[in-house]
Length: 483
Image 1 (cartoon, rainbow, N blue to C red):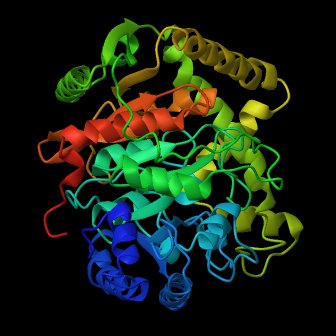
Image 2 (cartoon, rainbow, N blue to C red):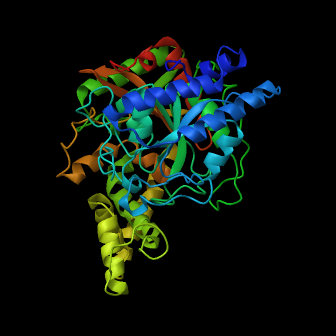
Image 3 (cartoon, rainbow, N blue to C red):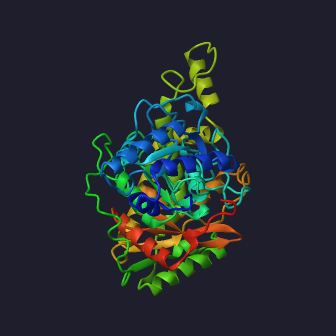
């Protein structure tokens, strides 16, 4: 049963081939057996999962139906879950049990999903490798010596290893799409505001967005359907009708206009990845798509702009973790200043401290105009580039990452090198656009992903293109050895 996709599980439950409880027990046993190899879970919620599975079976027995009713999933450990540890993979929140559910968690629970556990991640979602977790790095199931990508690496590794069919994740600068690419999954970052951020512990509030990680575009459509929608509790949530994402999956790609940014294919891109991107373009052309070269001239400024804006917002968001109200508190502080300093110094890891310091510097008097304000102006130029491009094309296609998954520890002493791995993904966050990564092949046994970007609220178009591509390729069906 562990090889079933979310869509296949929905059909199996509807046809009474198995119950949600049977499936849940099988996957929990698999997690306990195999997860020690990859460290993809922080908490496994056996009792909650079984009780939710029984409730889902009872709802089906009473005549209720629904694609997600009884479907097992995992939640990235920054979504608040009532009564369950929500740690953000940090010592700072190791003892924190949320008193409420995040909107994403409650919406999916209402749809009938079964929560198997909380997945590992980079601490406070800061990282591209899932190495900064207080609970240890996550290993890529395709090769245990390599990273799975971050910050949603636990969700990605768990789905890739067939420990569960799908999981929630978040994307601040590529943290859904990049691990999807490095583990051969489909990952979708929705338009900013499409999915509620309420109850999702913030890294950078103007960039964070929740989305699904699964093996197929069809599964992402099902999970996004349950997650999306307006939430009055979230001031950044947009009151926009949610379409039926599954309804448009099989639409024709005849005449679809695909733009290939020339800036994506310059220095820094592994030529083997470039070859697989071009191969995916040829497959889409066979399906009727038309391809043209475009330009995104301000892309070169994206990384410096992002690494001013995101740390600035992080330094503000993480100021609440002070050892006073909740979370980690140092032992025997001599005074209030000592309490603040040692609680934060002992509770936060090195990467989080680095970004807080960068952000505080960028926001400080005398530097705000020179750094933060300029970065926001660049952000607007990047958005304008996309708006101009989408006047002539329907989607933008390119590599998701410039390189293959690197070895664990290889970039620990060079954080800038790790930041550069987000070069193709962060522009979508700066502009608030939807983006998707889909499996496109392998190099030396390691997965490669292709990224698609679309105009605001056109998640359905991205899912349609990816689904049609997956109907004529089999990259998304392959599983790591031993899983």
